[in-house]
Image (cartoon, rainbow, N blue to C red; front, top):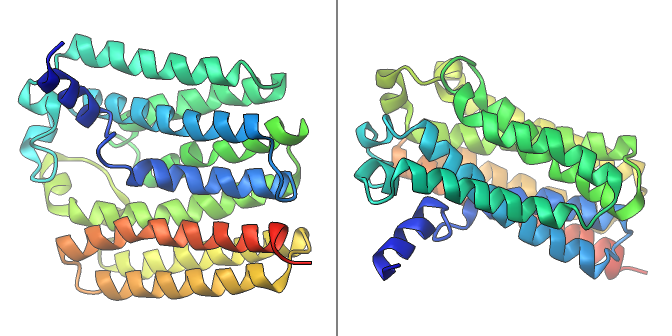
Length: 287
């Protein structure tokens, strides 16, 4: 296999763009740290970090398969390997299956509850690309799909999923709605022309206010999780930092400029990282 072909596979799986994997990984790490009181097993850490990257890559391939007749007409996606013909449909299907199977083999090393939870997670990840054709708010579907690592991580670490995990999943849902609406604002004109649904189109002139409400709701739910877990004030300080980061994003998207909205989306890595840092300092670094 040539170097160019390997490069096309890596770009198809977005291995060259880690932001999506990081946005999926942070809430999973939040859950692992909370479930283990700051001491997750090395095996769980390895399984969930590797599994997150594999499933995100598989999801990207599935997304491009679903959008292969559309991506060539969208400014941001016209150079994707399936749109340009660098990778065939058959090759993409085999790559998606291979990545999914590797992730599934990792899950098989965990307990039964984690395995059971992985089944709806796999369905959601595989079906998300189709929701953009008929569901007016596909970002909500994505938020549920992106959040399933939370109950899975809790199940792997403790053998059960408490109500706290579902509150954390709800917080992640609203965070996903916030950052993926910023992402959808980049493609708004193309999506309208192609008949693709998105939260940016649904909200219309309320898009910036909608993002603000989603950030605020996510932070409120994260505070509720902290209260349930009796976390140290350091954690709540990290939420204040995250709120400042969210405020910066709102400033960036205020004029709805494509590049600024995309920068705000990418910067969400720091929102997730700040909350994780608060959990680490609280559970591993405070007396």
